[in-house]
Image (cartoon, rainbow, N blue to C red; front, side, top):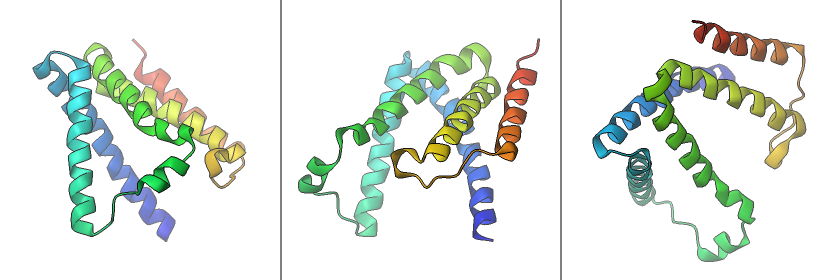
Length: 148
């Protein structure tokens, strides 16, 4: 049952990703450049996180903890900048649905690789025929959405 709840919640969180792309694209149009909108998006997100940490009583990480973290693990923010900036640049050119499904396809394919090999300490979940078939259905959806 817990898995079903997680899947349903993430389905609706997916709405937020599409909405985020549309909101940030409008912000980029108002600010005249995608990088400005990306900056404002990350700044507002950082402020919200700081407030959540403060009201939840969760301490900020200590410097001693941060210096022990492998440098590769700090790439998450950079990956977010690449993702958000690409979304901002491409939605006006091809539309939200096409950008979203292309991103989703890339996420699913790489997620299968991460799961299969247990990359970054993720529990191993071997690729099987069902998972490949499901992925191929999403890729087929990408192709159908892009038919002219």
